[in-house]
Image (cartoon, rainbow, N blue to C red; front, top):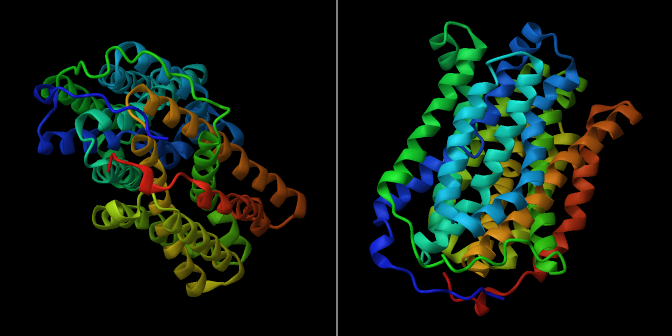
Length: 397
């Protein structure tokens, strides 16, 4: 059921262009500092003598912390507001992400974990602020900050080695600093271009997700299914291709799969208002993602690479459609609570389902079996899309 919509103070709401700018800039840092670690991982591992598991944890540890710290972020929003929480989280991203390069192994992993906690603060704060800043354009606002997130993923993973590392003189520590400091821009922009709203200052409840409410679990499971495909494909694409003798196709495969995420966010600018809140697009996109992933596994060469395009496009669209639902269903701190619960369930799934896939692949001795648990999980989650609240009962979009 939709949460109660409180009156907002129009004088406290930024103008539409400013809202769009703030959402997009903040969205960049939902994933950018996480995705700069994989390109730098070989250099970090050589310098600090890290094993394979420890090297992989540079990327997976922040994802796990998103699940652990999301509920704390919801509590903080209920106490100091979404705007202050967002500014604090961005500043913490600057400090923690930069600190990854300041010391040895303990400092690296402590700072990585803190960075994950900071990002966990951004995730529920953005949809909560969206209900204050732009309640009539939930779909558009979500598409904007998710476009920022997806572009952050791409530039972090693709520009680190050819652009930022040379600027840093080949120093991975300085490279981390150069990617981290610009997070000050959205933090200062929010501080200077927006003002605190009194609309939700008395709304101090609802910070803890109602775990008895099926909606929290439905959204989290569906989000986890989409994320498991995304992270699982990225994790095992190289080993699957290598097992088929197609290792030389890996750079092209990664490009085809990950750049479709940006295309998905652009598509949402035109179809978001029609698709968000309806179960049919979720069902169709989940099915397409699973069929595309199956095609990548059981085909070879160009047909397999072609199958990655609808897979990546579908999971990108699914992600945006699902993230847009908490501010569509609720208002104020209830949005933060629902979003935190959804992100917690989704992040746990994103961590453990691909991990289970790796164990299955090792056990059966074939890389392609690593993706089978992801396919099974997605098939089990698919019917849940039919049981989400009907959009006809909503009034916020």
